[in-house]
Length: 332
Ligand code: DGY
Image (cartoon, rainbow, N blue to C red; front, side, top):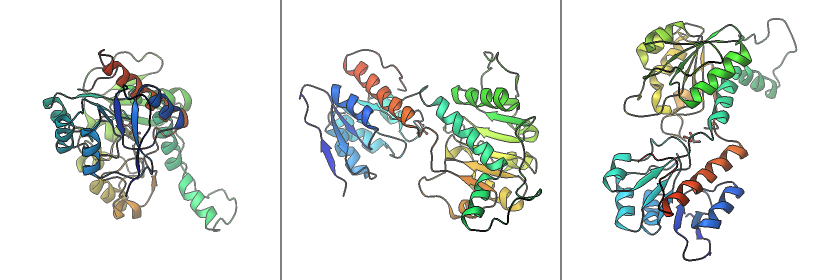
């Protein structure tokens, strides 16, 4: 049973129901302007708990680990809920059309997690291509037989082609690091033309199939939506080169995990570095046992600086909303 606790502050402040704990500095900022209710134990709340919390507060501050369904939204709107201020940029866990129909406002936290997520993308690229996870497991198992010229040889990033699907803020930050820091060639797919890249060469391609065929790394940076569901599907995985890697720091839904497992087991791709999964935090056992993978527990934005900045963004958006101003980061 979760321990939910309302902080006693001035009762004139708007109330906000916060589903998970935040870094201290962000919780302190929230307490300054709002009367927050925290899920003190930080265990996942049930849909009924979130619905009851939203219905009895002016705002709800959920995260990617909560499913904000039409039922929760209806309960909030029927009570005192007016705003969903998401802690995170991705909003695929929120039923946005239900929120819009109920007349609720929705905000998110773009921008502040771009660098952290791009850094983690490069972390996965290096870990999988330099066999870092494999090496660490070997050493910890006491199985390292010593240095030798052929031991755990990986592949360099330099001179390789990185194919980016989704050239928004995070895609561009990854491209910049890969091109300027590691000497990689960049190609990318984006629905609309991208014309503001001046620091490095990057070629926009019209076809994801071509990107998959030409890339040594395929990295996903598109938002999850019905249009991007399984955008990296079996046919596209089959276009990839035998040595090429899939990197996903976006959302589990954008990759067909069953097809990925098949490609990994068949050795038709070189490996995968994954930070996000379908049905998190449950990881499909076939993903766990697939060869040549590096698996991380959704760490993209997990730095103290970034998670604090995300919390402060929620505070800024909620302050603007309750002051009667436009949201800074409106989603709905
Ligand atoms: C986001 O903001 O969407 C992240 O994935 C959560 O850290």
